[in-house]
Length: 298
Image (cartoon, rainbow, N blue to C red; front, side, top):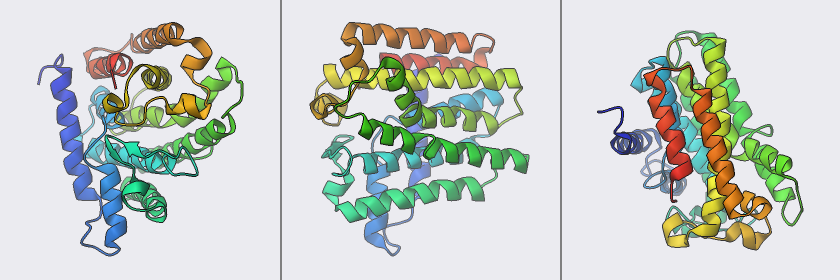
């Protein structure tokens, strides 16, 4: 596949991950079947799979084996899917549509959705522990630690807590950035670093460049999400448009306005490319992904 054929590559990764996830998730024929059905409903059949794409793209930089990247990408996507299930619950964002279909708690019930998210989180760590992802066991332990921090109170869960506390509050741009460095950016950063660590050992400068890239892409992803929440409709997004504004949540568009938010996303895109300046063509997929994140329309 041509290195420039990003749409075909992204479809290939999405299709591969659908197959991988379908094989790793428990079958609904296994008890408790309703819980397993909910886990599969929340994970399969939708989503852009941006985080798995980041795992695979970073893995290309390190020459990682596809089988290792599949497991790491599955773990990341399970955490992302679980976070959406919990975010959509009435006690959080109280949303009824996700990925163009009823949210998990609407399709099943709140208790089942809560347990499905819990089980998906546990499965993600099970995968990282039971598959060999690095030649050095110490490196694999570091990968699990990195992943745990990205998911916990100093990462995604903490960012969601800050987000809930900020509803109806006037916050500054640095405070908003800090929120999304945790809520959205932590898992995106983990996706890049996990993919990179599945392959040959990288030097400190290389890992530092990938880390800077991931931080820029993570923030850009949220900025564009806020732009689309204002500018796109629900049918295009596959979720309820304008929900953050109606809920009184601070966003990049509410703080900066649409034109400045778009400029900010463009600056982050430039910074992401700059972070990869010392890398050769093996980082082209990461470059293309940064473009996709900022230029996407849903």
